[in-house]
Length: 161
Image (cartoon, rainbow, N blue to C red; front, side, top):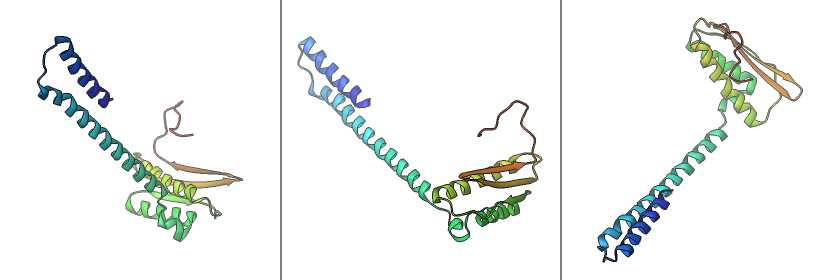
């Protein structure tokens, strides 16, 4: 887009000189050329930053919490709840059946969802108890995290179903 603006400026300046049939000072030609090079450099820089951001997110998504490898998902969630409860005023109960090994990305996702939900529960005024439950039904796995904080207004929907 910016490169197009530089080209347009260059064409406009050269077209103006042709219409007026004057000899143009060469220094004026430098303005659109500089604009062209500057916008091209900025475009390349932004593309490099975007590639860097994408690669960083890709690496972060591939990172696996060490607790999962050392303890397994069930024990890692219980350990996470224990440490989260110790750090705040929450009494956290974890009910997780002994699970078979799940795909690594599924375990990592569950392990990242639970602390986010616990943090949200800690923010609720009046929430002192939190229950974390995992239910396995065939190929389905449900995560249920409930606190005793104030209920949502009638008719409202949870953020995620």
